[in-house]
Image 1 (tube, rainbow, N blue to C red):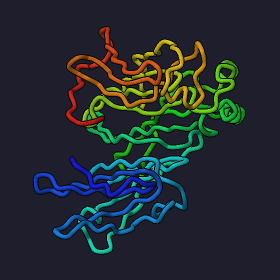
Image 2 (image 1 turned 45 degrees about the horizontal axis):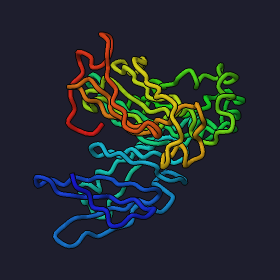
Image 3 (image 1 turned 90 degrees about the vertical axis):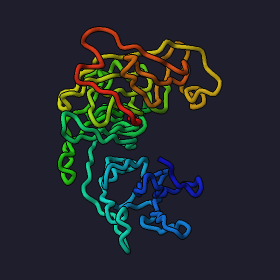
Image 4 (image 1 turned 180 degrees about the vertical axis):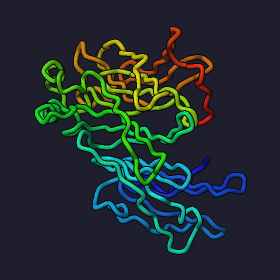
Length: 314
């Protein structure tokens, strides 16, 4: 699928292309402004639909990420939660097309909403949502302490929502590690002393197949790579993890550029992840160790008997 992007700024655009005679709408989001693009015989026209810093029905905020699925758009609202919009009027090229708010999912134990993944598990619709900030911000030592004092998880995490009713997204589980448990704050906080961002939080997640999701893999910065069995989304089960070895400070690594590398400390795993069903592998990257190819082993591990290969990016 190709996309139409006029220029790289702090704006978002609706990209419209044609494939096999069918119009395909795809969103490209950089930050806070989205615009509708109509592709006809005449040159594309950019028509403002969303004012800068605002989404319809949302008082204020930026869009960190946008995911399109059918006629719904899942917008990660910069500082908290996700909003679901109906863009069917835009897709139908109706005059004065409107983007309508369908629902919002907000919470207190996370910030800096990162991205979503609409998935199907056993024929039912769910949404994976990932935060980049913890309950008090971007998981610095100071922010984590504030969260712990308030009795809230100090680090960002992935969550799963039931969206079989798009008007009522319902949280079904949180993919927390032991570092997220407030009971462990006294042990965890000394470990991140002097660090100012991310630490033990989530960043990117991927599933093995959006149309038949059985496993979810997430990069959790200092906590490495974590893999979960999500065949029962209400009871996700961690089945594998990988913590890369500590290395020297690598030139060009964001770990060092951000000033967060510590001698003898953990690597930063923050990249997207790809499942390879045929080879039973997970492929990702960590900031200091670079490309990582992980092999699943054991009998009670992925791929499961119900797992199927995917032809799309997950």
